[in-house]
Image (cartoon, rainbow, N blue to C red; front, side):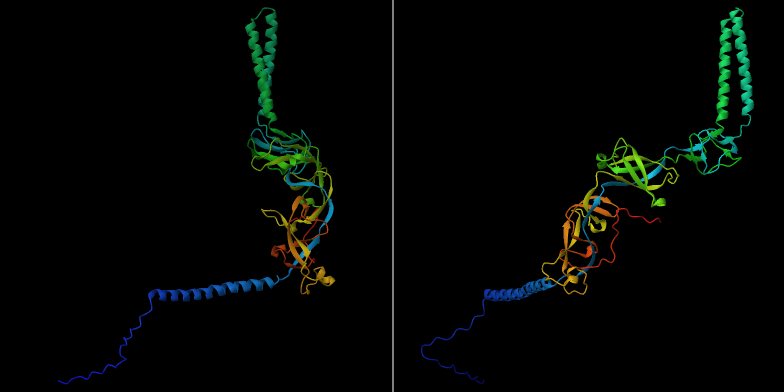
Length: 415
């Protein structure tokens, strides 16, 4: 066997102790180092995000909103008549659908469609058939019963007949006379007369036509005067009363207002709509107004007053309150030339007007206008078009070439 060589151990100083091997890092120390590294990474991520947001906010704060083009009017006080408005329907003072009470064949028609007829005028006659012969028979029977009664009554006074005979004769006579009246009434039903004066409508029957009882012959309506029914909110009860004047307009005669007088208010308010029915009467000498027409009603209430009025397009109606936008001078913009100061110079780099939203309290409306009780004063510049794209502080450019309608009595096109 060959002996292996053994390297000699280096000799150290006498009395020296041998060095210990290095220990690995403790687990707690490694965990602390890892958490520190994670914290640094998270700080860098979120810190950079927060820094970015701050810088973006500062950048956006320095940016100005682009100017928006709007139309404006100068608020001014005008004489304003408080007014209640409504829509209504014209109705005839008297109107009826004429019909026969009994069946029969149409023998004659004594009117033309659209005629003005008088009360009691004969309009239609039905064929009498044997009515006249039956009437003559009943009249003859009644005459005989009358003679018999008178003869027996004379004999009773002579004590030739009993009282029972006289009573029987009296009953027979009364029955015969009643039958005559019944037949006469039946014959009268075969003649249809105008129950009142008015204008008759389109004829619905023809000669020779069999007419069942209740069939409409034509409509008859009184046109002068004519009534109108309309509804007002219950709050109007404090200002509306019979005798007040009204004014109506209809599409057929847009430029011609018609005047009338309130005749009555309903005795109760509708529990469904909380509205009250009002009826007024109008003179209609030329028969221009017709039953069934749609009409717009205006009633002046109270004394005229000078109020600030605006086009209704300027108002933003919101659940939390009505608002308008004003065009006010931008305090952060230095004085500019006259054109820019008026907000009309579209080439101005910095428009001198900006939008400001204010709450308003509204009064009555008339046509395209509405009165402003609080929130806007005369002389302020109010935006009437283009305000949907605005918010407080938005720069403005004014272009008043096209303005919304601002008439107290607008004309509605008749389509």
